[in-house]
Image (tube, rainbow, N blue to C red; front, side, top):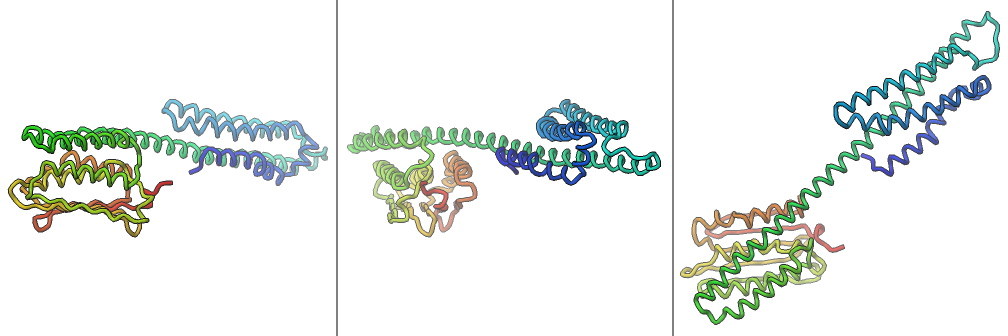
Length: 349
């Protein structure tokens, strides 16, 4: 498809180069000598045809059905006007020098040739203008469609971001509530950590991208907060391979936390030994994020597929289309999540 500026260049090229070149292929000098007014009107008429079809006929075809009638009306009007031009030639044969009547047959053939030349120019100009008009109009409609889709995706993404906050608050407040009702000495420290998490959430939650290290630190603080509600049966192992390759990587904020929440919510037991593994690394142009936790109950997988995971999948589709893989599975009584993001879609500009 062609954009607006390119279509203008095509218009200028046709009007200033192509059309004059086509006209010069005809015996235009002889025509000018015998009837310069008619030739001038014909040239002006050809430019009018091009402009009318480009600006009115083609756009009307893409509008409501009633407008298509006007498009056909304009097209047939130009055909009728062109026919009048050819008739004018026949009624006023002044393009040639005066010739004897014995050569009337030759004159008729020459007039027929001129008539065909006018129709040829008309068809050529009309076809070219309609083709350029169609390409321009189709390109415009595609751009409008893409803009509408972009705004739709933007609105959906804003909705998913808005859903993160209640989900995060619900899980975290449950932890704080448990510490308060048990009168734990860790409640005060947990509230301080919660304040820091809230500060991060409202400072970065609305951004499109944040530094990966910043997001990792947020996850680390969240894990420390959640440890306040755990006993000796549950152990959390968190690792982040920090090296030069991850220094300039950015990621959508609060994207990975959904899987961390899921592991800490459904992989914890108060009476069984349970290990939770969370790992983040950047290598070979890929960000790899994994979580692994014990399946404490048969329903944990169903619960984990709730609004948090569903929300995260939709955000991934919108932010990293065709640039990520997400695998969620059960194996050997373990719940496994592996998310791989292409870092070429995440580097800061």
